[in-house]
Length: 271
Image (cartoon, rainbow, N blue to C red):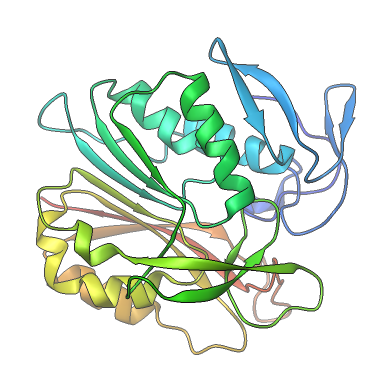
């Protein structure tokens, strides 16, 4: 794992140790002796292939969370699991799943058109078969045109107001329409849209064996974690929750990471 010695990591926030680059700022990050700017595209060699990177911090986050901590590791009952990846970003998660199960079938959604272009290039570079990429925003309806905050890294989201970042119009796709057969792993990391999507999919979650949800809380929006947990519990899941970004002293100061005051990883599984 590469050592980052400049700034602190706020996407994960594990004890706020200076291991990972900050995700919500424009600071440079230090890779060994090489300073990289946020949102500056480059290429590197990863697992013997050329990896096309749109943002170093997003790459570092993916490589450390997935290939260092194995947060998406799961046990399938066969060697050809069906995986749906919502919020695939540049494709680190897709590469991880294919490394775990080479014969898996994957449907990957990425809403940001710019980042989607990197996802496509990486799928081709790694010669990943049985992998479909869809440039649409996962939502509770299909065919709608919504405003998408294009942050440039891993934090892009459906939103309507921002004073700093650009917006693009994206087309939505209804995730529920894809939950019509057994799904071995469903990953939902869609930066705040998770409740609307999970609520809409509630009646079809029985198709899902393993479910990962990243929960995002915004200070100006009523929290709905309890509603998400009620939905997954009703669907027959047990869950394990791990902090992704939290404040170390929330009674005193609630830190804000790209507009969010809390992020949690929710691992939902069946006995």
